[in-house]
Image (cartoon, rainbow over the protein chains, first blue to last red):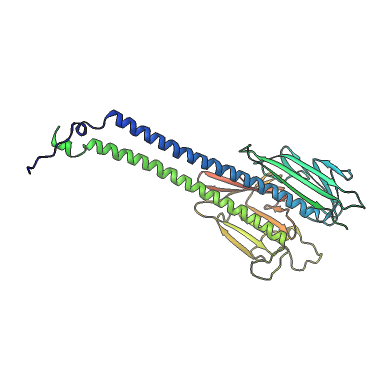
Amino acid sequence: MTNVPLQNTPSTTRGSFLLELLLAFAVISIAMTVVVDAFITSQRSYRLIAAEGALTKSLTVVLENMTREARVSEHFRCAAAGTTPCTGTEFHMTHIEGLNAQGAGENVTYGVVGGVIQKDSLDLTPPTVNVTDFDVRIIGTRPAEQIQALITLTASSVDSPNVKVQLQTSFTERLY
Amino acid sequence: MSSFRKNGYTLIELLVVIALLAGLSAVLLLNGAESRNLVQLQTSAQQLESALTQAQAYGNSGRAFPAGTDKFDSGFGVFVTTASPKNIRIYGGLGDTSPSNGLIEEGEEKYTVATQNFELIQLGGDVQIGGIRGISPNANASEGHVLFRRGESEAHIYTNNQTPDGLRITLASGSASIDVVINKAGLIYIDQ
């Protein structure tokens, strides 16, 4: 067997063929498109989930505050001088015992002003939350029935308007 | 083609490659440092938000403070001051133990080293309290006290000598900053 020296083929010496380069670019482009698309989708999903979580948290805090305050209050109504049953976009009640800034006998009002839930003109939701609906439904007539309030809040995220959350709670007026 | 050309790269090619790598590394390192800074700032803002939420939850539940003791306090608060810009204090034990009139006076609710137990939260990295500002009336302050009395979700807010409706605490790191805002109604949020 004779020892033949290795020789480069003409194509190796001359470098890559244009078609090979184009093919490589095409494959890399497709791979990058898939990876970048997956990354952007996951980022978008994360943002949506985070926005939804933040919305839910904000509305939950409001409903918790309302229900806590309702435990020491009476005369649930939909207007300052309203009666039950009623529906409306404001919730009014009168404190029986002092809690928070209110003393016994003081009235409290919850409502929406410019997309923000307010309690007696103090904001209860952050500027990142746009509250679109604050529905109040109060059923029952004293003294035959216990008064029951059904509060429904609908809000969207200011940064991601497509993210919407609706929360609902109901509570009963205690007998004092 | 010469044998030198066949066996390796020219000095210019190497220098160009090194220059490109150096440029890329510099960009990545600078961006990385900035990102770390922002992440640290975000984390610190969440720490302060959670400290306020924790004091609010303690106030609502009337929990013992410090945790693990049977001490039952009338309220909880968070204290920040630009004089100790790395520290956030959650404290309990508001007011006199036996006030003569049965009421807690507003001045007694403020944090004082002598009378209150506290949990210390230290801000990480280069983050520090960059400013404290009362909201309505709007005025800069050097210290802020946010109090939650037992059973209440609403906050009692004091600065050095005012009782504003809200408080804006600015956390800063380098040129970046994030605000944590709280108002009298008990709303707590991060404003960035």
